Length: 403
Ligand code: FEO
Image 1 (cartoon, rainbow, N blue to C red):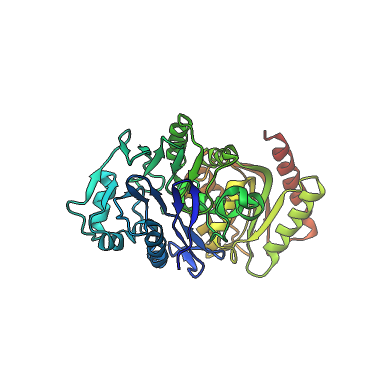
Image 2: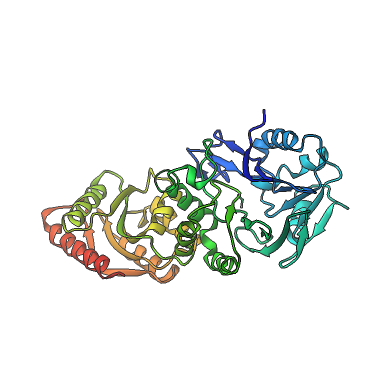
């Protein structure tokens, strides 16, 4: 059965929601599911903007069939060829053999790489090209590496709708609400939007900045991303989040404490530090166990907070492997511009603090590591409390000094 939403007078959301998939890209947990957004324009020509993941292809087809109501499908604009959007293109070509694909040179190359039969069916476009579908005229803007190199975003000059590809997307299935003003975004969506951005596009901050600069020259009335809510009010709120995230600026002054603990002793020190920080006036503190928190959540929180405490045991004379994995993910995602504090633990040959400092200072960019450090031999004891207090004071001073 079809399930569509009207977006403007002649534009419809025709995507689908997947609440069965456990791991997005087979990596990132999505306990609230994900939406694959696709949009159908009914002008003098009929135009589908991107398709959907194979898992919701049937829903897309039912939606498109219902709205076309016997009309042919004239065009499909492919802004992004990653299979969570491009996989259903082949089925669209089979159902609508006369449809023309409008896309970038690289996306057309990717269609061939994925094995699609597209000879004679493509119209290649590049930045600045325009296309008229009747009342609506669109222009294409290159957005390379947001999130793949072939990405275009499409701007409808007639009504100010921006089809933004992965940009401005979010994890989470849509629960009937489509528009940002139909939901409590801050309460129900922001965390998953941040986790989506930081883990999927986070590496490409400079490229997102380039897209934001191009977007600033457009009169955008509505943002239609490929995942999550459509933005039609308060666009500045979300643009500001994207601006911060892509400049690697923290959203909030606060302290994220991530600990790696085998038997609870390092955990105990992390909890003691958290309580000290709150007592000293830093109320915005979050504590996570690196071993049972998926790293995508840790990355998202790292983008959020200004300060990060790493508390790690020493393991095989190295950094505790889950902590090392977190650091490697920070590196992969180009994480930068944060202040760190370190707690290390080891029953013999305690090395994790030195190794974590070296990683932060030499493998990541623009990271500050506070001089104070707490070294534990097996467990936190009275003799360590003054060091822990000194570390807490140093963190408080740094948080309060940050603009
Ligand atoms: Fe939602 Fe880069 O695909």
